[in-house]
Image (cartoon, rainbow, N blue to C red; front, side, top):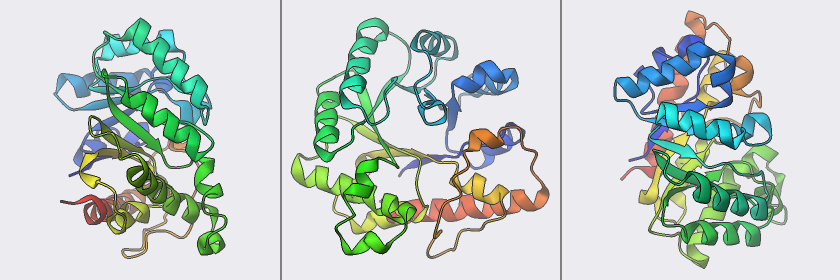
Length: 277
């Protein structure tokens, strides 16, 4: 059973309790929107699970680690993502090392995200993370450039970029499992998704799905806001690549909310199909 969270505009934060299994917070928004930070403090007060992200996807680099540590200490999230560097194995491993040296006692489970440009890089990164006992969970992103390079010589290269990302992560996880076996002393988090059907397709691959504990994606929300409904069998052909953070102040109409709820329901069905027990 995989737990699911969809990032939402501020106007939908309270509504999101109706469809999110846990709450996913972007730390850089705490400084910009006090009501956003207050919502996550409330989540903790009422006993809901919170995962705090370092906002690298939104900012291009991880949020300031000193400020990040302060927010972790204040909010006391159930989990948080250690600062990393996009597609840079060495910098990410150094950042993990420094974090464990300076902030190992902060509350919450530590999640370390794989980073690298090539399969070799990503494999080295997961082996490094696997050696760290205090890291309990590994994040795997939806959009490594490796996914595109690894599919360019296959018949599937006629697929668009988003479809290749979609297949690429499943192929990557399968390759890791066959090559070194995914470390069994960790759980796994899927960061985002290219297209929602990726989660449904996971059932076709041979990796061990039970270790995949959580996923976050704003896809059902962003597409719902734009009036785009998932196809109940095939998901989407392409991705509206606007980030949820750029819609954070958006007010949602009744029609948009209906489409959001439809997409959320379809996404959950896809996850249950691919990762269900």
